[in-house]
Image (cartoon, rainbow, N blue to C red; front, side, top):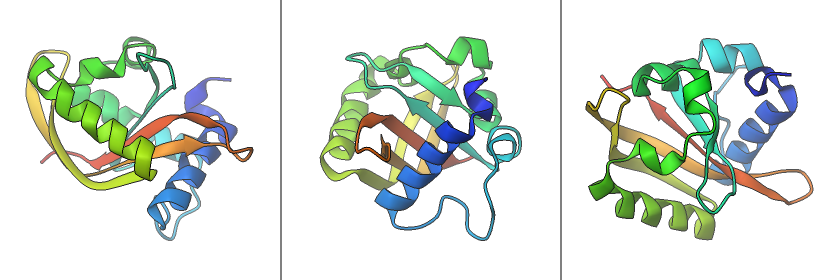
Length: 146
C-alpha cells in the first residue's frame, strides 16, 4: 500500500500529534488518509529516524509548496528542505523536538526545488511514536504560506 494512503501510518501521524500537541490535528473531523494526503489545507511532512533522516511522507500541499512530487520527496534527506545557512537552526529545532516531544509555533525559512525561499510560520513539529513506544520519526505541519 502506498504510504500516503496507509491508515496505520496516518494513525501514527494523527495519534502522535494529539499525544504531544495536546489537541487534535484537525478539530471536528474524522481524518481519512485520502483527505489528509489530497485535501488537507496545510502542509504535512514526516521523516524517519536515520542518522541523516529522509522524508517518508509529504502530502500534496507540502509537495506544492516545496515543488517536489511524491517520488522526488520521499527518500530525500530532510535537511535539504533548508538552505545551508538555515540547517543549524533546523537541527536545533529537531533536537528540541527530540527532547520535548513537540515544538509549537515554529517559524523558519525553507527552500523549494526551484531555489525559491518561503517562510513557514505557526508550524508544529512532533515526535512520531507508535503504540509500543517506538520512535518512528518526526513530523511537521504548517499552514500554507500566503
